[in-house]
Image (tube, rainbow, N blue to C red; front, side, top):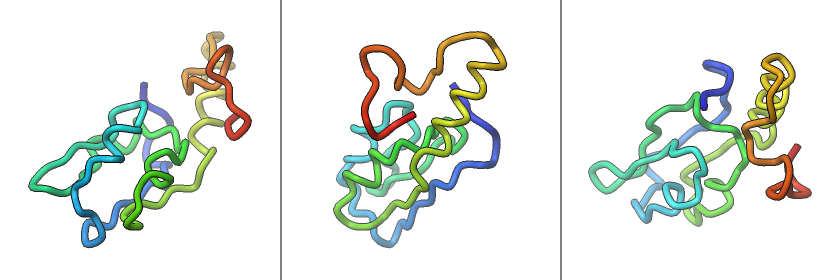
Length: 98
């Protein structure tokens, strides 16, 4: 799943990354990988801006404006006639998401 192209606020600061891999583990859409002992963004357009990566990075290597991508998922579901693909509907719905 990709969200709106070139609209994601996700940023990485490699100088702060120690390569712990927390962002890789918590990202539900596989946005990150570890390369040369540092986290890298594989595809920004797959980020739904849930903020899980930022919340689990103890070193301040990531920033994101939470919630914007999730809204895009809801809009896309309305346009396509399907369920939101941000995992916020049904059983997985949390109070911090759409």
